[in-house]
Length: 388
Ligand code: NMX
Ligand code: MLT
Image (cartoon, rainbow, N blue to C red; front, side, top):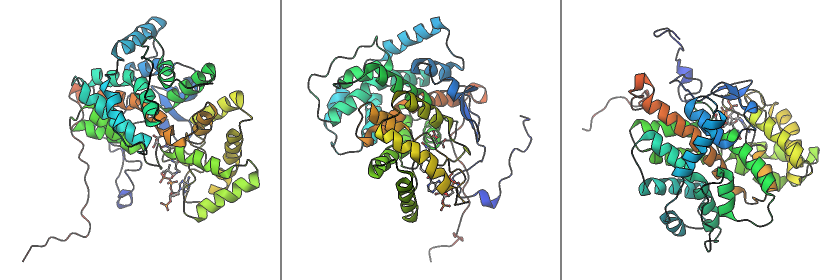
């Protein structure tokens, strides 16, 4: 990249497009191509799907996969940071039970920040990542009214095991839970520099707000149905459809479009093919739960919706995105309430956003960090005038 070569011509048609395609910075953790999807530090996502979430956090922070020794040391470092102060549970007790889980999530992140912020970008990001499994478990339990006799955290367990231990759900298949949640976390950790939640988090951090404030803000961005909450809306669709019969699924899709509602789990701002993260999750479902009723419905949706959406030429990408399959898999392992699904997305994305914030604050511009975000807006319908 030559320093002063023009990279992009901004035309009036680029205005009010949500910065679509406008280059604004560099990203060291991941990139997304329209046909191959996301790559973490150069690795295509499908090649990383079997790694442990902890190893992928290491990759995003260090830009290299860990050696076996580094992997053990990093897990021990996370364990050292993982203790969650008891007062988080007390704060959760005060929240409205019918508040959306993503609002609880954002309050949870803020609360952890109020309880213990060091002011060091990397320390705070790693501390938050290490505390997420317990925070997630407490969020589920207390919002569901299961606040009594919560088992102590066991910091020697993996991130997924710590969450499952705190959750203490009966009749779960630990191995299935581990496979599905670990893969889920790895697939959702990062998606380039410009996705809405990551961009929001970095923008907030550019004003030198704390990591906790920046990530709580990012989570509010993720909670929109066109972004992370599409996984909730997609499974709500699936439960409403209730059949994998292709013609009934097609009728449902057409009715939603006629009512001017989005088909959740399809389309993307950058991708122009099926998202490889969807492909990985479909392969996982075919292996682990091919006869699950909801999985059968999304299998049909995957065939039907792109054909129907493809009839509308203004839709840039009619194919399945990351949110098509995750809900059916989470439902299969016992998470029956879709309103919680975006919290898993948030849990994963904290790592990518945290790593990107550190890069922007401590590496970019020779270590000085990216300055405070301040893009230009052009005045519209505002001729200069004066109060008489
Ligand atoms: N269902 C219905 N309409 C759609 C869809 C869809 N799945 N995808 C795009 N469109 C419409 C879009 O609303 C826009 O309409 P209008 O011109 O009237 O504003 C038009 O097609 C062109 O949009 P695109 O350029 O194809 O997509 P854009 O980059 O603006 O938006 C999404 C990307 C992801 C917001 C959009 O595809 C969408 O709303 N998808 C459904 C929601 C979803 O699954 N979101 C999750 C995305 C991944 N994530 O987790 O963040
Ligand atoms: C995603 O994971 O697909 C996103 O965060 C949305 C995007 O990349 O714009």
